[in-house]
Image 1 (cartoon, rainbow, N blue to C red):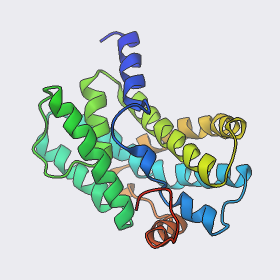
Image 2: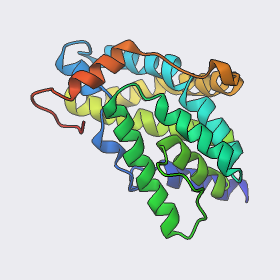
Image 3: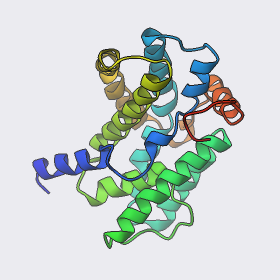
Image 4: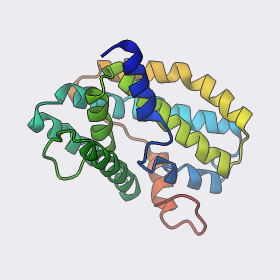
Length: 218
């Protein structure tokens, strides 16, 4: 596949129009705002930067790399898919991963893509498989995944903090280098170092399930 075609495929995969429902989840950020942990644009940047560096870089990125490389080996692909689901720290985060993974899985199936025989595809597994099938390289796959996550989280912040479009763009610009660093960090991790613990995010996600008034799913 040509570079231009691969780029277009990546843009398609990270588009908000992709019918996977990522916009419906806040990953604990809605509770963090409601509880006063995150109150302005600077704190949004710090929260997202921490999740990116200490969470996604050490869990999602190395898993994406392995899932992208395991395409064609159903047993290995299934193993890393199971790891992805097992590492979600709350019921809310796990259900989000499953819902988005199934949505993309159904889309791939409707396009006559042969799918590995796994019962519950995770979001990283479905994303990595789509990227591989559509000619997107592993590094670009990870960068696109992180960018899509960042856009969704900024949309949450815009509705809950709230922050404006200019602040959202400033935060995105500030975190672009962090996305590149996260891919470099995650790509270098050996198998036995994959994993992340973000107690604040896990608590926010758990407490979000019983938050009185919510815009986002739990």
